[in-house]
Image (cartoon, rainbow, N blue to C red; front, side, top):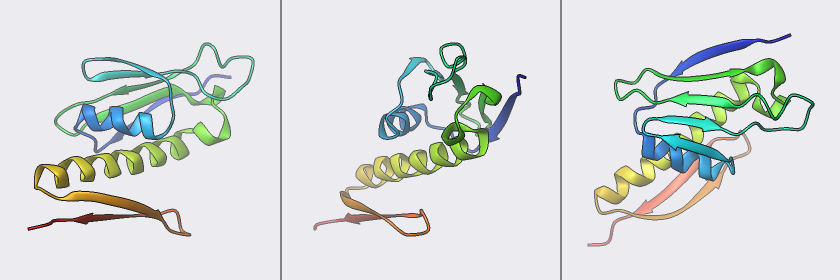
Length: 122
């Protein structure tokens, strides 16, 4: 039984989405502001059902898929949370670099949150 839905997330930078997908180790294609993530997981339908990300510069980015056929790791809530977190890391890295900071590393905490370390040398 199909279950195709779309969720809106606050993502505005397509280049950071691309970096996030790379960090997540996912295969994808990009056409401008739209991404088609290759199907993930292994089931009889996995070759037919990918995830679509449509980045809107106004902050109304949508993430859509037929979530019924995705593996547990890539169900709607889990995938959206992972994408949002990876996007946040990519966006912080991009913005801090633009302000002259140097990225030093990340630490993943027990609760799943990520701590970034940046420095600025004068």
